[in-house]
Length: 566
Image (tube, rainbow, N blue to C red; front, side):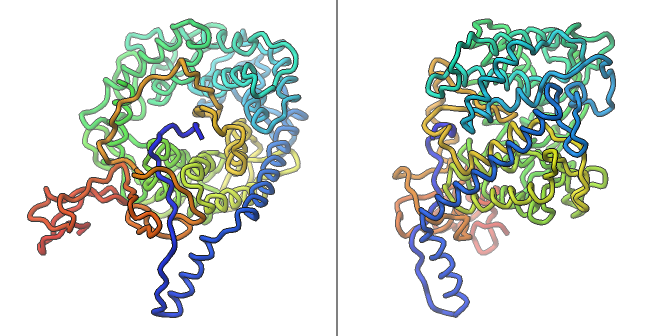
């Protein structure tokens, strides 16, 4: 499986359990654990097929209704069975400078192409590629958010182009002359004026036809100027035009130079002056060093138990104690880092929130144990499904299939309407909102489908973009990674890969410390784990104590002379 490119992700599976009949309760618990171990592979396979088909039905219920009631406009309004040309509204909270004559750019269709490919519908894929090549134009007077257009339109077009030219997919039976790539290149050229700033950081807003508008706001977000490299870089590699990758890399380097001494970044900044406007920071080659430093800083300053709060970029002190639905992507990223133990821990907390409310609220205040009074909605976000997919790939733990099944049931129960799938306006009442976001088709359905059937990506080297579009990484794009990463603090398995029917989650044990009677020579540790200096954990001072593998908290030396979380 090549979508996870870190070789040393360990597979958290555990062996036989020693049953000690000390009490009837213990015998019962051990029986349940043993039962989990002897899961019938054939019944699990049948269940995966059944769930795959349920997700397929979800996708086509959403897609067919979009094509019937909204196409070629941007997004579907499933309750009224109508449409919204929402591209100019994405990221536009104040709904400023909305166009008068804009009739949509078929955003949902562009977003759906890679999902159609993964579901194996080559007929519909080819038909819609032909329509886009003949009808889609970006020569329209509309002000759009650069970040949103990059992940949705540019990423969607590049991904579909790569899928179209891959002969192993056999998606195009007729002739394909790089029409999608030409559309992507035209779009990329329209992005370039946004980068013409003193700092090299791009404006957040660009007009497709007229470039940067007069008196345009100079405020942008960290993600808006630092996360454009994947799509823009791929566009340069495919077209041979270095400008796209160059401006995106310049912005990324400039952003990194603006980090605090703690290796933290703020939330919003000014693209002209280069000054930070919001200092709160949170999770939401040279580039590897950037990531490593930023990841370790996140673990150090944001993590509290299984959760992550926000912190001041200068002092590292907590600012906001809150869960946001977008943060649910973080466990998936941690899987790709190799920090599966930490990913397991946070993912469980997000799923508990899903179980509690039926879906995940947009924002939950951890310090007050309450939903944010004005952000009670759930707009069909995909992040938890994404992390569930990655964790299942890393662990093959059937527990994650149960998580996916619970999500499918909730989505069908609470959000499915006759005209598609509607967003939830208030998770406490399950009142619906008349909006089916394009990412429901691009990501939510896709990741749930891949959770139950990964055959499309098996043995292929794909990386998924922010919006869930698979980019086939060409061998010529590869760069050699450093030989060592975190000097032994990775999740490792000394004797290679192994599998079992039960694992850390199903056995309800801590993956970083659980014994393994079948594979005693193997051990696992979190990326943040620093062992105590002595095997017996004895100490004279705090300097002899390491960092706990599960909580990532610094261990200290007790008065009795032992390291621990005192």
